Image (cartoon, rainbow over all chains, first blue to last red; front, side, top):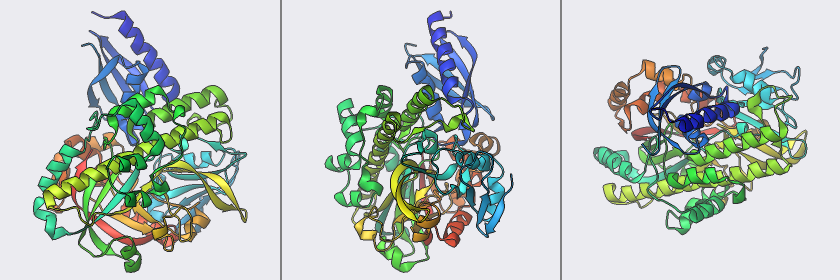
Length: 87
Length: 471
């Protein structure tokens, strides 16, 4: 069951994230289910150091209410699964 | 975009449109072809449009595309008219390299390399999401951000001699109140960690000495001598400082008139410009402490595995992502400027007050890490660099392919096998090994050859890896 509050947190985070990082890094919501969200990260941040800190940035944009569950490299972008911290 | 050849290793894009100065690229023809493959030249040209830029916008021999400024980019700005830009420093503030010498010879350690890697992996946290062993309180972190490597030495991590042989003596004066709560919270669990990406800890041996006298002064005595190289930065804390101030600068100054929004900046002498500088200095200090602690644990592991850490002095610790106030000659007169080095290493020659006394007659050591499995180099800073590149040279090999491209085309297991066939032990996640495979980087030998031929950093010694710990 979708928790609408968590969904809102993720949507707001995507907006804020993109406002300050696009086109360097672009976050897009792929799915949101059972308090798990899958976000696609694309952009030329993939060429720089500390790639994973960009995913941590997203956690920060969510006010630390989510945590990284899995990072999948999909050639030209990353799919990162975030889960609720209380799950 | 018209590139004018100035000499064998120097290329110029003349001042045009909104450029305030020309763009100068230091590269051999071979390297230039690779530089042309991404947006490096366009980015270096954009930097030339920024307010208060002095002399030229420079691209070093290892330049590649970055955020706003190219990585391998150097630009200096007037202190009154100029700007400071987080994109000109990079996200991993004070990413840098530390080199330790030892009295050991390669043959003394070859049979124990695996044990060394096992032990160092236990001592030094690495990889994605790996928190630090040393959990600190916020109060302690504030002290770290204020004192830099001096804090670490006071706590027993290393010696006063390490501080002497660290750029800025391991500390830049910072106002820690400029660091956000978020940045602090990201820093607390990451102190003393190597991190993921292209960071590493490597056991190396001296493969070739080009300049015996200078090498000796740096503690590089013989071919076959074992050295330790540590490459890491300020982790999430530095990243958060960059993120915070990009937002603040955009809110206050906007992006109007910028050739690229990623070049967001603030006047150096504005309140916000100074605030960013202070937060950046705090992140610089965090990175110095990281490398100081990792060096200390490395010495501990040497004691445990090889029986002694005697003679493990520090050659030097250099930064390659930061902005600093330095005196340089502009239009025939010495003046203070704000030098941004993003993926570039300071390369001061003899006589500069910033170079530690022990090296002041020679020039500073410049440490150029290779990629995993390739050579690294020790160079010496030069007066020529001060004349033609604001005292800067390259910082490493520079990527030629994306990490995802590497993962598509290279398998980590294969990388490990290839390295083993060259006699190099390696420990790290397979994915990390593929991402940082040597073929994903520019030819380090060509990069340092270019630096040497130009005279912006002269060859001292070549180091080759014996064992690699990957983040």
